Amino acid sequence: MKDFLTSAGWDKAQITPLAGDASARQYSRLTLGSKSAILMQDPEGDTALFARLSRHLLSLDLSAPAILAEASGLLLLEDLGDGLIARLCDARDSEQTLYLAAVDALLSLHQHPAPADLPIATPEHLATMTDLAFDCYGAALGQPDPEARDKTIAAFSPILSEYGAPEGVMILRDYHAENILWLPDRFGPARAGLLDFQDALVGHRAYDLVSLIEDARRDVDPMTAEACIQHYLTNSDQNEQQFRTSLAVLGAQRNLRILGVFARLAANRGKPQYINLIPRVWGHLQNDLSHPALQYIKSLLDAALPAPTPANLERLKATCPTQ
Image (cartoon, rainbow, N blue to C red; front, side, top):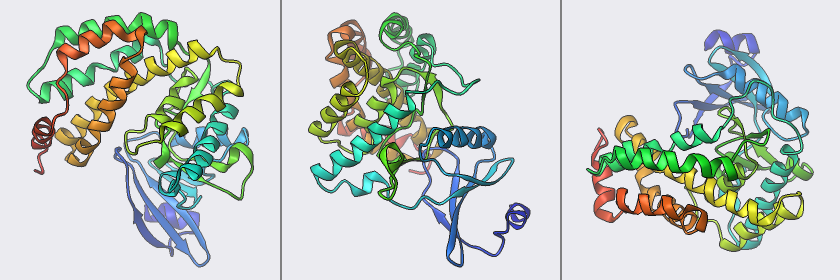
């Protein structure tokens, strides 16, 4: 890393570690006089892909960190500041303003085809990704149910084919308030600063919207969530009934996977704090499953997955090696 910073002219900078995320990536802010930059360390990730996608987003006049220098596992990024919209939503009015700016960025992104060579979020792939709910969440609570897992995957595939098939747009996947910056000095869709897109896929345009409004980390005001949906519908050519069904179907798929991911983060990565988020994810899942299109899947899940009661949350935390 020292050679990288020296070659980039930042070897004399003050280094301040920043809070990480659920991944193995590490971030630091570099300060050199009046200048600052962000150092991303991701030795196991594809930093070249992040750089390529950042340049793609910038070419669309969206806001992503400019790449100042790059090497294998290392990136020096433009510092877009600390204005995460999750920290700025102190009232409903401000929340709606910030969230609608995030929707504007999606509307702009969806006017363009996804970059070449991105993996495709096929219905079969998305359906298979729900396995973690059974193999990590359910199993940790003493209810491994491979039969229900296989039935759920089989039932999800045709529903996702109808309501979640890829539409040729880029989906960012982790599009939520802790990954989006408010940049008030910029204009239009560029006011939303995009930070997390290295796991992007080609997918359905409802995917990132439901990620935004069904946030695992904070409660989004229902009026804000509805305003986001209406804003997207008003400014696109989507059929409302079809699109709302897509939101429910893709929301259920995402939230099932997140249940498993959070359980796995506690058990395998020593991060029990994610267990505290599971009740909110469970609530989103139940809301999604109330849609008539998911009636059969709801019946499977009701029988197979235990609710995150206080006792079950403690059992999940107990799987963490640091507890």
